[in-house]
Length: 106
Image 1 (tube, rainbow, N blue to C red):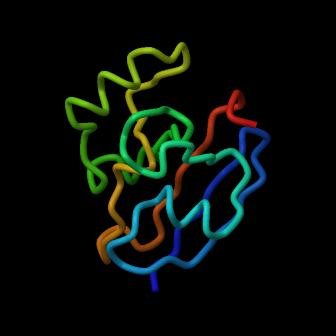
Image 2: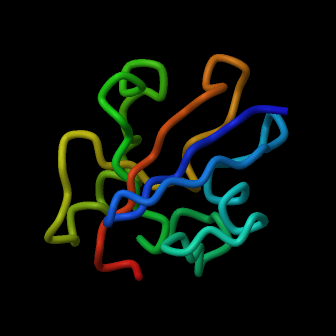
């Protein structure tokens, strides 16, 4: 099991365990993380799982893909570290990952 920490816009953090191969969105939804809705079920067709990857994890997570970039471009709060949690597949290299959530998803 891997650990992922989700940090709310107010700084409250919650660490959950997730299985290798699941997405960061699935791990959040299955653990009742407020601020990660996953309305599209992980098909990369909405932005309700928008997160900011903690700077120290940015390289390990990697950049957004083309479809993901297109979706993120419609948001007003996109940053260089923005990703859709449904597109982050959890691997052993991401054990301890920290993701911050924007205020407007609450």
